[in-house]
Length: 403
Ligand SMILES: CC(C)(COP(=O)(O)OP(=O)(O)OC[C@H]1O[C@@H](n2cnc3c(N)ncnc32)[C@H](O)[C@@H]1OP(=O)(O)O)[C@@H](O)C(=O)NCCC(=O)NCCS
Image 1 (tube, rainbow, N blue to C red):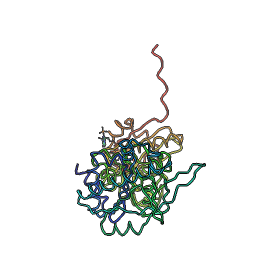
Image 2 (image 1 turned 90 degrees about the vertical axis):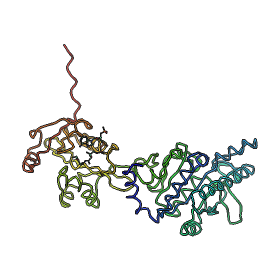
Image 3 (image 1 turned 60 degrees about the vertical axis):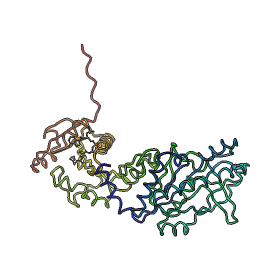
Image 4 (image 1 turned 120 degrees about the horizontal axis):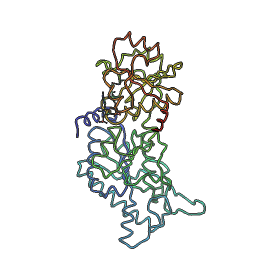
C-alpha cells in the first residue's frame, strides 16, 4: 500500500467510526479464493470501530448442490418461484455457506453470529403465479442486529426469512441487504459481486434508490473492499455513478470548503487568495467536484459577455485526489459550459500549472491583449505575471485545400 493510500484511508476513519456498514456478498464470491481477504478487510473495519453486518447470497451454492443431487431448482435468486424441493436445497446450501462464513470470520479473529433477523411473508401470487416459498422482506429485527453490533459481534444474515409462525422463506439477498441497510441507517452498503448488476425484485438493477451509499465491487480483486470504502474513487462500479461523483454548482455552505481546498495553493502562489465575500459575490460562477459528499475539487468560470470570453479560474484538486483525471474533467466541464453559453474563447491565468493547460487541456499561450480590458487592468495591477492561456471554443475553419 502506498503512503498516500494509507493517508487517504486514515482521513476517512473518524467519519465512519461507530457507523454501520452493510456488506452484501453474493454466493459466488464466498467460494472465491479472495474471500479470505475480504473477511480480513471486515476485521480491519471492526478494528476501526465500524459496525459491520454481513449479508450473503447462496445462488451459486444452490446451483452446485442441485447439480450434485441431479435436481432442477425452480429458482436460484430468491425472486422467482421457490418450490418445496428448492427451498430444501436453499436451506442446505445457505446454512452450509453461513457456516463457512462463520469459520472464515473465526479465522480472522472475529466474533460473529448467524441471525434470524429477516421477518418475511410469502411473495404470494403474482399474475396468477404462486411463488410458494419465495418470501418478501416484511421487516428487519433491528434490535437483534443492534444488540450484536454494540457487543462487537458481526451479524451474518443468510438469504432466508422467517415469519412469526416459524415458517422459512427464500429471500433475495440483494433485497435483504438493502432493507438491512435502510433499517439500520447504514452509511455504506457495499455489494461484493461477480455480476454486472444486482437482482432486486426479480430484475437486474443498475440503480437503487437508497440515498448515495451504494457501492458495487468486484470481490475477486484483493483489497477491493478497503480501497472502495476509503478511497472514494474505489475500484468498483458505483451504482449511483452520476449522482455519486458529480460536478455541481457551489452553494453558500461550500464557501468554507472552497477556501480550505485552495488554501495550500494560495500559500504557494499557485492561486490568488479569495475572501469569503469575494467568493460569495460570484458564487454562481463556482463549481464543486464532489465524491461521497466531500468536495475534492473546485473551479470557477467568470464570464465577460461583451467580449464573448470566459475565464477559467480557481481550479484546484485536493492533493490526495490528484492524478486521477479530475483536473482534466473540471476543465472539460467548464469548457462545455462556456460553449453552451455561446462564449468563443476560454482563458486561464496560471503561475505554475500553465503546462497542464497546454499539454493536458489544449490551451495555447496568449498575451495580455487577449484579456478583456477590465481583466487586463486587474492582471497588470496584481503584479503576479501569470502566464495567459487561451483556447478558442469555436471549431476552427477547415484549412484551405492545398492548391
Ligand atoms: C493542476 C491541477 C488542477 C491538476 O489536477 P489533477 O486532477 O491532478 O489533473 P489530472 O489528473 O486531470 O491530470 C494530471 C496530469 O497533469 C499533469 N500536471 C499536473 N500538474 C501539472 C503542472 N503544474 N504542470 C504540468 N503538468 C501538470 C500531471 O503530471 C498529470 O500528467 P500525466 O497524466 O501525463 O501523468 C492540480 O494539480 C492543482 O490543483 N494544482 C494546484 C492549483 C493550480 O495550480 N491550479 C491551476 C491554476 S488555475
